[in-house]
Image 1 (cartoon, rainbow, N blue to C red):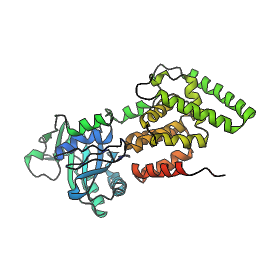
Image 2: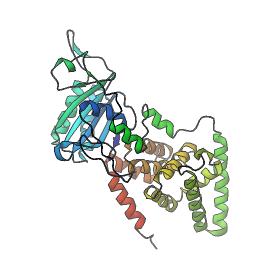
Image 3: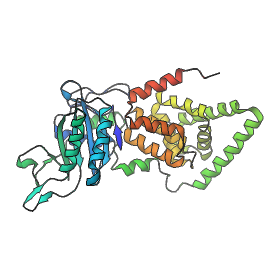
Image 4: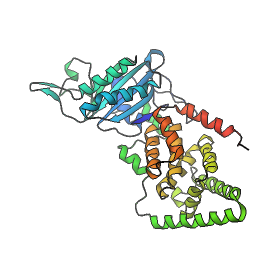
Length: 368
């Protein structure tokens, strides 16, 4: 399941809190614009998906939490609906929108066709109603058109549908302004942190081995505190290289990346690095964690992947956060911070709450 919040944009309401600091007001005028907005709300173009959008505020005009899952087999529709509805309700919605994105053909008896996945929509509506959340719109998006499941007129019958808006919307402009990159599909999110084609992975592994030996020597010579200090310097130096206008991040040498990822194996250094997402240059930190995740061998990629998930969630990108967490736990299934963050995302902890928690942790003096 993918979830995203706080960068979703409200119909006829102001948006929104979180990163970047200044909210941008966006108006989405009708159901067609909501359907067209899905790629910007999710960060990628969904395929064969069911999406629930939370509506809050006066007149149910603010889009809050957005959750998505692949369309399930028919026998699993009820259980998936229960999971998605519970997740959406962590946002305390006043209402909801259900959107199915599918290229499936029309269904029904010969001579009486119907648009597809009506049973799935029924399960979603039933699950939300059971939790006291009314559904304002239930939409199908297919082939560049949209249908309203509740519309009884020919415009929403099989073979009908309304073309999705093609003009540049306020939401697209706001997405560009806030740095959102809309990928073609979820696989493109995975590709962001996949090893770069043509890069010598053997050389990266060798650099990590050399740095491990160097760290061991410093521990024997000067103690753990000296290694931690060197590791933190490596992190901050590399983050500075990732600032906008700095030399290209792929200019980081294998040794520089190795020093960062080995440093992050120290829990104190890693926890200190969490604070970079709250600092003046969160984009630089996220770029560094992305590069380290792409290049580090397992299990050294688990820490930067987890930090990447934190950065992504703080700016409301739940899809990227889930992809990064998946990478961390694939690499090191027992990685504690990744498991804790996974539990938080499953509970749909808001970016604001996560930011407050990290701020509190960062302000707590170390024990002893």
